[in-house]
Image (cartoon, rainbow, N blue to C red; front, side, top):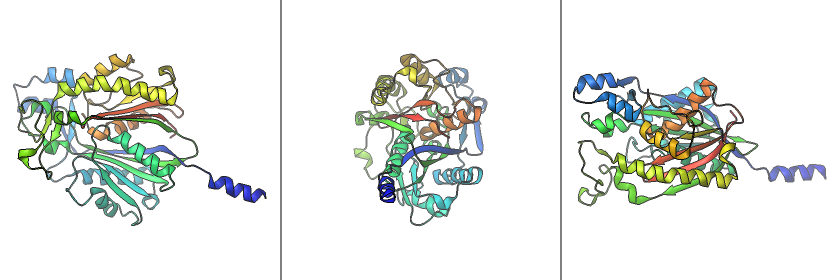
Length: 345
């Protein structure tokens, strides 16, 4: 009778998801503000640094693509953290710079990483909210029992969309990849997921080329496209959207989690630019200690900023097991997402 009850309880067991080890990979080439100043003497680099908070960025080589960065990050995770590639059940790749329109880049990663052929693998096209979206997808896969270990990779090479003379974008975006292992856990560590979408902001950050939509019918930039880059960004509109959306998102997360602001140790936000983060810090009434900023030496790495920040905080000892944190991503789409996360690694 006791054995029957034990079997029954085991059948009711629910897996939860936890953020495990993270490995970061940056391209070898580093582009500094001093180099840009020498290349473009008329650029006011001190003023640009004051607004962006960025002094250097890693830039992918001409033949180096998102999958190359992803493979390097994943292999680093396997090697340094002792993760068995054969233990991976699902690969989630967040990228807006895939190697090809098709096939799915995640399928290429399965082969290059020599994972089992009975793994799931998919790409999802999201930018700066992508890491939180990826966490929610991994959480669902693990809770449903479809996977026990999910390899969540964020990899971007935005530099390939940027013209060398584009002062507004070249000084902000850097290339990088992050490989995060999402593992099953006995207790919930990710909760209170909240999402937001407003497609009317699609014209503020876009690449109109490369898809099936004819150029004559493509979305037009909200304002004059001043630079020759394929990537267009309307910075002021993005700041206005962010400052309006993110504080409400944080309130929604706390309400869903039934927590107060005082119950949160760290507020970890997508690392866009210093100007945007400073305005958010003021709007959220947070101290620098509770809302850390990390982009000076890597720039805005799009979907990889949050795992890069988490990895840095872990290594510096500022992020300790048991801490309750808010994770928030926001940007292109417009898209925004956030959740509560308890550190257990």
